[in-house]
Image 1 (tube, rainbow, N blue to C red):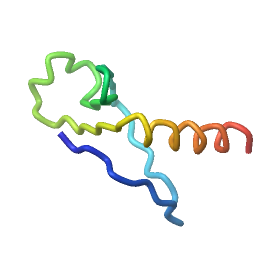
Image 2: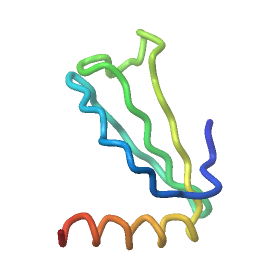
Image 3: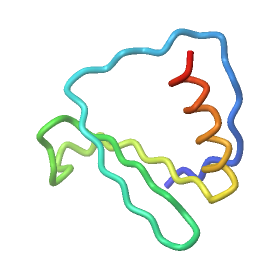
Image 4: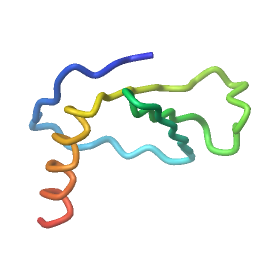
Length: 71
């Protein structure tokens, strides 16, 4: 898994990807998001991408998402 230690703003445009699904789970210390090819709920294709964030980074991400929603 990829535990994210920091977030930084970059000046690139987001790359749009289609036919992607995601799931999430969490415990008392980490929140995890996994993406995979749409429909591949068993993740048999082997192309998952994973991120994990702790509570401090989650708070930072919430602020960034509120900014994004409010623009």
